[in-house]
Amino acid sequence: MEKQINFIAIDSKVTLAYQLIDKQNSAKPLLVFLHEGLGSIAQWKKFPEMLCNTLNLDGLVYERYGYGHATSLQEERTSDYLDVEGNYFLPKLIENLQLTNRELILVGHSDGASIALIYASLFPKNIKMVVSMAAHVFNEQISVDSIIKLKKAYQSNDKLKKSFEKYHFDHTDSTFYAFANTITHPSFKEWNIEHYLPQIIAPIFAIQGFDDEYGTELQVDAIVTKSPNKANSKLMIKNCGHSPHLQMQPLVISKIVEFYTKITSSTIKNEKQHEQPTL
Image (cartoon, rainbow, N blue to C red; front, side, top):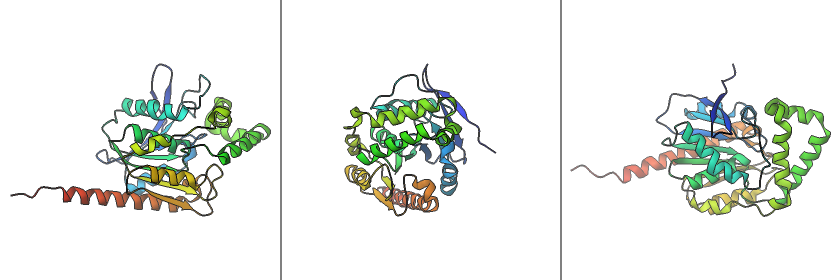
């Protein structure tokens, strides 16, 4: 049985769609799943529920402005769209869902991972950790070339367009072209969000496939080295493309659990070391 899609107004213009994975653990961190640049709730498949079940943590899966069941785009997208998601839409969603005091684990894929990094930089205090899968923190030609290729395929292949229509309905064209045209526009050439990384307090687990057609290992190296937490770690996966959480799901889940266990154990150990002896 499909989980219910819920809706919440962000402002007078935009309503976002979301689903909750309720494990009855409101005192523990909440997993927040941020989808890719052409993604939606459904395109995560079973990954969010499987990760929540394995960690026994609640989850929030949502669709951004312009995607899936959320409000379709009403204007042309600009090259700072990821900054806007990280410093406006996601904070408003967290606020409107009354989650501002909840400790968060951000799990992002591609564009969603870039947004997770921006949010973790701007609102660092309540972030337990960030799982960054196939994130971009600067523009690479491999990404532009792959999106140009994808755009040509979309325009010439009805099956590809219909596959997106299952998730983005009657606004599939606006969703697709907002993404593709923005990334391939000359103004996006100098796009870079590395300046956010030094302000991220939480540990980051950066995951990427060696065969990712949209980015190279330079992305994960920048993420783990330019963010200050000493627990930062990267995982490069062989025979894996742009979607490690789907292509190498058992491995990715086990490694996320391992990373979470490690930082949780470290936090408990540090807290005990700072406890004052009772006299």
